[in-house]
Length: 204
Image (tube, rainbow, N blue to C red; front, side, top):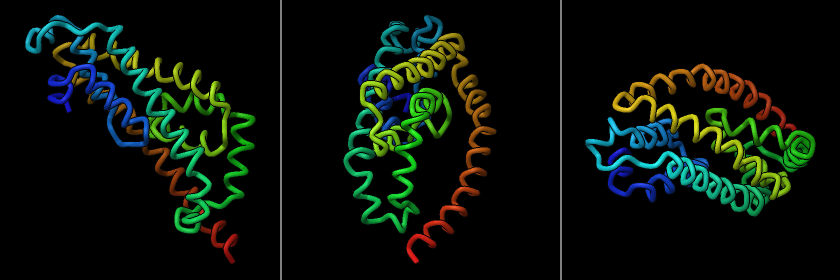
């Protein structure tokens, strides 16, 4: 991934940010940590001229926003309910769940999207339920921009501060996320068991 960024520059950064925001498992701490390191003079000596911090953050935010809007419009809004119609039994979702999601986003959508943008795993998928729930587009875009700006800025500045040691900082940051991911996995397992029972009852 680092070679891809070095070879194609900000175009690669935009593409990685876009793809990650469409629910792909791309580690953003590696992407923007490395890009941030590229803005440090000490690191960039081996890779050409230093990048602009503003450029990295701007491209990262725009790429993340574009990917999030794609996920919202296509994966959530356009195909969300049709997917439930066809494969709801197998992906453990019912239309009652979608109705619940709409009510949830009507009350807590703003907080969910804003906070979700800085939570590992959640940040890459939050656009889909927001689209399914038909969250207000303008509100979704504004909150996504704010959340992505915070996330990208923090990672970029950490990478810049690390310079040559960006990979070590990236690994430390990744390890810091592991407890959060572990908690999400446990909660997901509990929720999965509950979902299986509920969907079975719905289709009986």
